[in-house]
Image 1: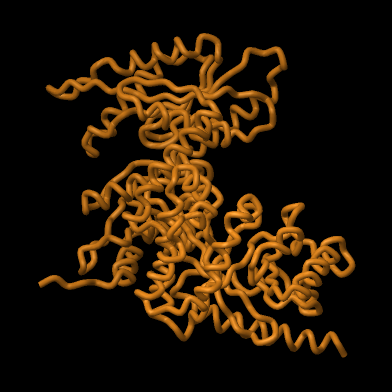
Image 2: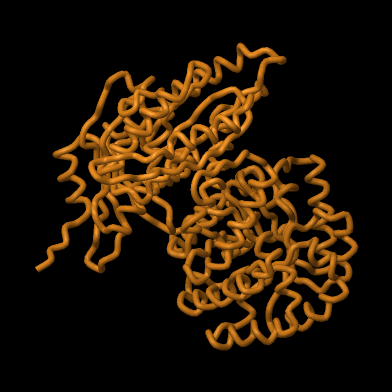
Length: 553
């Protein structure tokens, strides 16, 4: 019979045996710190603020990718993975053997991982990598920085090379033997003119003169590719190399290493020995292509998450929510909305995303009518231009038994401006169907006031740029007052976005602005927290009323 042991009980058992223990949780392809023992905090130069943060939050990408690979390997194998490595090269002065254990729960899912340290080596590892004898990353970075300060303007330029040894086909228990041989060959190859460090298990960084660098790297790759003989087996290893120029321009060394690392990632996409030089345009193109490829799989992979931010009516305290889309890619990690929305629009995928959001929101409205009373949903211009949009939205509402009056459609100011003539009739039809329409980011166009006169909308949302520095008698205050005055005359509701302080909120309470939205009340949060957010938002609104009355006395 299978007996399920609570994770906390397991964790305590490991802490009795080992001082350095981590508990990680996997969510949307990201590995999140759930617990870090006191000794682990010292080892990794972390504190309690890391709890709830991902590996990507705490480390440069070349480190986070490497560490994450072990957790993914443990998940794939459904068994422990043992690594001799430095998880925190930039701050840690010790090297350790680490064990990553996937926790298989009763439903056979893996959500948590326990990582503990078996043994710590302390042979001056602040400066030297114990396994290879090469310099550590802190020592490497310090050397490069010192060398750049001494460089003259006319000096021969240098470069950083990031080398990845392809060990993916080598069994884990044999990798150390192969790496020892690679390290031995590197020591034979490099003269005093180069400087080499070990970044992570199978990755190395070289600082060298850029003169004839390409030829030298190709020669090194050929040298490292000579067969390795272990027992009766013969193995040929290949490498992927990324390079970037190093200049005395004040750029942080960590940034330069990241450039070489990203060039190496491009080189890894090729087979055999490969070399790629860092190019900012190529990197941007690669990022765009990768984002587009992963975006098209996001819905089927269940990677989109709906977040909700409260909008408060200042007279009544009623709360409704703007729905915001977040993407947690299993491959790319968290992708900002201003990145993936643009990509989705350019690749023709935005319509499917918008309709997916609309349908999911209607399902939430149907299942939680008491807490989620009304919502505001952003919609792309391209989606708004669909010929059957009104019919499709109405059909989704009908299927979920939702009154369209509970839904507000938000469209950005610039998109409406570009298509005002085409959209006017559609706006009229949508409003007749029961939907309300809001203009987002109002005030950012020179024609804002003009087309507000023409377009049939219910609400305008003043852009947060006008609220950020809002003070009594400031330029922003006079602009906001003008918008409010016009809106009142034509019967349009106004929401002020980006309210972050009580001072801003109190100042707006003295105007005709009906609704406030911003971090002062709450950051966007998950659907599961709405009950809590409702309560906290209402409490803040009540306190604002008390402060408002107190200030009037």
